[in-house]
Image 1 (cartoon, rainbow, N blue to C red):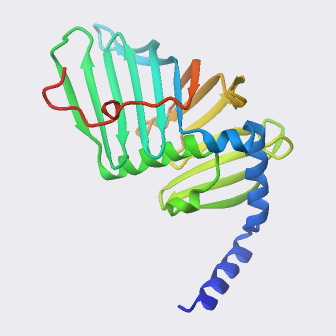
Image 2 (cartoon, helix red, strand yellow; image 1 turned 60 degrees about the vertical axis):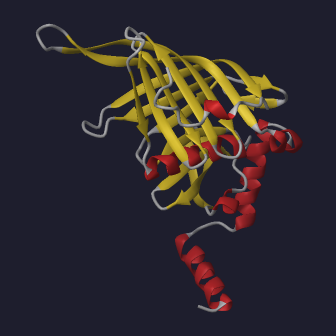
Length: 259
């Protein structure tokens, strides 16, 4: 296909699909970034370090086999570092679970709380690594520049969220890996994020860190793939630190002999 034909095909697709012109999408992203903080500060962020508490519910069986739920609580630490490093550590009565990404390698390690010598290590598969890389970009890029990693943004049109007029943008990393973001048209605030699997993330509260606005709470609404039931896991952030430098060892696949 010649360049002229290719551009014509793209233009026709956009016209029939009702996709807005890139300039309109850029304006929404610009407003969303301005809501978060100054351009110079956002562009200079190389890492984000969160600590807090995760609260949810877990299913338990009694001695008769009846299933009930009870509160579950864990401390959580989340690190994102450019370009593609991520580390999430959960510590609960069950033990310590660490999930990490080191560019094109990703792994999960679980250490039981009551058996210090017993632990397991799992290497994540290709699709899981792609998802981790996309998540890392989404947390560090602040909505701009997905084209540089081979993705694109689609404007999915106006939507009303809790009485707020919003614009729905799809951040498409590749087929099957899309983040749907709902931005308040008046303020630029991100009101809702949806994943392709139906999971949703809502943000509550506000914390200012070095001139950048972050949420105080992240409410994760997770759909059970088997039953369709929705469960909620809320992350309450205690501390957010920007632009720390972390050692390579935090993200590298652990040696099999490590404790």
